[in-house]
Image 1 (tube, rainbow, N blue to C red):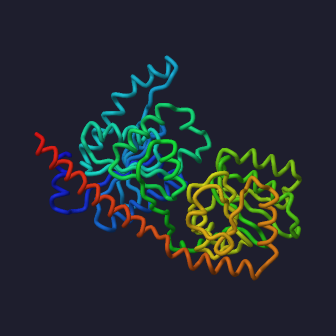
Image 2 (cartoon, helix red, strand yellow):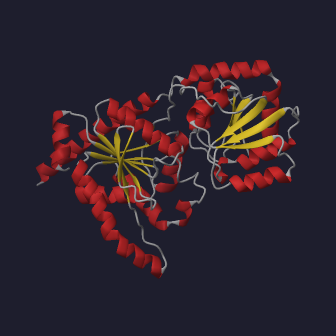
Length: 402
């Protein structure tokens, strides 16, 4: 344990925490939202916090986002081809200098990895080189990644396994993710820290632009989010022709989904609305017959909490962490999105029964108060304190052995 960490542990003062995220602003998504909200709450609680994230080639350097310093750091990794290996060797010294410089300038007492990838490999190296305690939070990247990077990369699998062993604490948003880490990546233990949701955002002056009767899907347009499955189910469902399907979001599957809609002859009933801001999403949810989350795998699903907050009935994938915190038939309809007939029945039932929609909406509003970003931040702060106590104990034992 370095001198600063020892001093923080001895005084009981809040640790200085580097949140090491796989992605961050200006990108949007579940991990980005989680880390951004946690950073804000930690700062408000008096924790000295920075975000260190992956530089994707934009050379953003050091910025301030929501009053929090964000450092964009290069994270080259070795690859199998000779050319890629040479490029890695050329880039590594400069990248490591930037990571070491971030440590020198901020002097973190803890590094907290969110969504393990190249960022996690470098955080593990920082832990080993400087003795900084490590916390790892998985967001389902081992099971819900569109590119199946952990299936393809032995290097990342090895780095993750070593980081899980070295970490003072490991968390995930659902037991589903914890179980995967135990089963496939050698985790012992693990703590569930659910996601949170902000209070309702301020109304936008432009609105969502939606009207009429519609079902709503929201999220990144990637294969794992399953919007192609929702489109197929909507096409087969026996619904009033006045009911539309609106899918809000952007991503690599957008053109493929547009072609699918055209092939089905549903361009007049299915709208790909593009990315909406937070206020427009909330407004769109509040007017929807139901919000449908058709993910092939979903570690948790912040969009589900946003639907509850907006008073929207929820049809939710049962593939992933939802059964850990949702009650099927009470505050959500849980369904296998790859069972097209079952997904059809779910959206037909929700669309046709106003009393049912009101019951689900009321139950969701009642539950959403359990999931706040303040609670998430406080749970992490307890883990930080426990990690500091653990590291202080290890340091005492090391001194006795010396």
